[in-house]
Each structure stands twice: as C-alpha cells, then as structure tokens.
Image: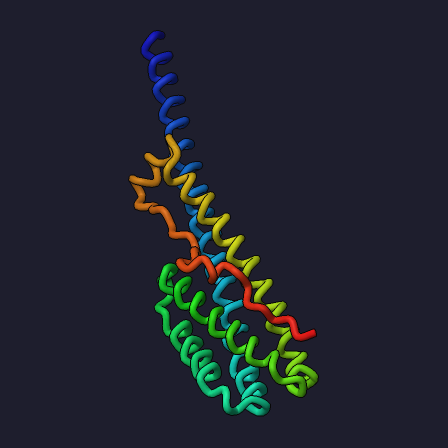
Length: 190
C-alpha cells in the first residue's frame, strides 16, 4: 500500500515538473516570436520610409537643386540603412539614426524655399513622412516592450532554467547611440 502512495506521489511530481517545463518553454517561444514580429513591424515602417525618401529628394531637388550635399547625404544614408543585414539590431539603429539626421537637415533646407513649402506634392510627402515617423516610433516602443518581456523571462528564476536548457537568449533593444537621434526629424512646413 505504501509503495502505491509513493509511486502516485512520484507520478504527480513528474507531471508537475513536465507541466512546469512545457509551460515555461511555450511562454518563451511566445515571447521570442512576439519579439521577432515586433522587429518585422519596424522593418515594414522603415521600408515605407525608404520608399518616401526618393520622392522627397526629387521634389526638393526640383526647387533647391544647388543643395546637392543635403540631397546626396539623404540618398547615401538611405542606401546604408537599407543594406544593414537582417537581424543586426544595433547596426540598424545606428543607420536609422544617421538617416534621421540627414532627413532633418534636408527638411531644414526645404524651409528656405517658400515655393517648395507651398507645393501640394511636397505637402503630401511631408504628411506621409510625419505619419511614417510616428509609426516607426510606435513600432520601436512595441519592439522594446517585447524585448523587455523576453529578457525578463529569460533572466527570471525559475524560467531561466528552461531558457538556458533550450538556448533562449536575451535580445537587444532598438537603441539609438547618439542622443540627438532620439528626436524625430522636424517636418513642420507651416
């Protein structure tokens, strides 16, 4: 009789341990997938931004062709940002920071041209860029929140036992290195 009780207790403990490992493993998988999806959402918004930039450059070029340096810098930074390898979060953050600075300078140049500011095409591009910059900012916040959740689970006891056993690792935040990059480019043309 005592043998059956001990066997039942061992079975209950084993079921609890299996449940613990399965539950933590599944939660870690969910958090890892949420983090990957969040980064993909940043990429979607950045692609939208990259698509707007050539139109913006061409529109400004039509009015301010002698501002060649600002136009070339934006084009160069766009190409550099697009060429960052997928998954290089820190490289992407640095490239995006440089692109934001170049866009800010280009938009500051545009302020000196009243005809450009009055252009309907430029106004439409400016609104689209403002919307895209807000979407990028929201996507970054969501991504960093997802990274925070994953990292907390990976580092917290007892889920860190499961994370270490199955190769779950902390993720990098999408952080900008230059504090001035944390500001959205100024895109008001009123």
